[in-house]
Length: 295
Image (tube, rainbow, N blue to C red; front, side):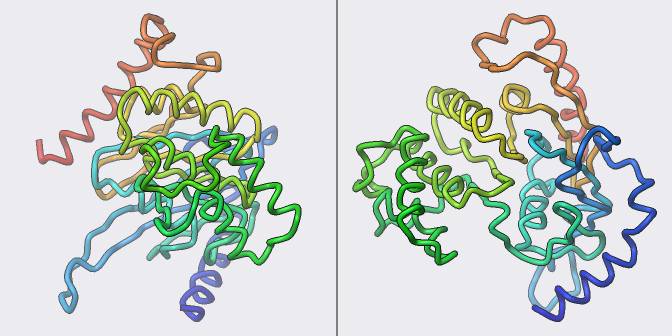
């Protein structure tokens, strides 16, 4: 694995250079903006069956820049490579071609600079809320008095004060997702990678969690890439929305969302600007859904 990372880093460094500076990635960055995350020409393949020479191309020539402090929502048909994109950015999967850079440095594996929030919560059932939130700090060997206060701080921030000693089985779906969010925030990463974190909760809880994440991100200023299947969620949360094509996924278009914040589906539903934007996004997305179905 180490040799693979070294070969990939050398190859990426050779191809990056001046060409990358002249290239206009989707949502390209100008002199006034800082691209914290640079995704350049990603192609990712998976072996279809063990021992068979068959591959599925999840992403092909996918490029995207994400500005520091930006909340980018990623929307696309099922199976188009959205989760794969997050896995590559996080250093858990390596592309066949292309690279990812964070703050100008190539991603060669997981880092405390970013954290993932999963749709299936990813909690350890034998650990309490407090111990689940503390887990990332344990892995970083940062368990001191300051770290303990940080754990308590983020438990309060996500509204779980009083549930520190509860186990995941004693919590609702929304509360479990709050634990996952607090665990990610506790390591104080620069970047949050969120893979459909509200997919498993009911509609009311989902809207409440959207309000919660908007409040927390506004307060902390994190850079966020948020994968979703919901057009409304993508518009409500994002500063910019990226539509991904049917597999193999590529960044089809990026749409700036200029609606004032804070936003909620309830308050925006009757807004002509929202309706127009939603129609535009749905038009881009539905064409890809049909292609994905072979229509």
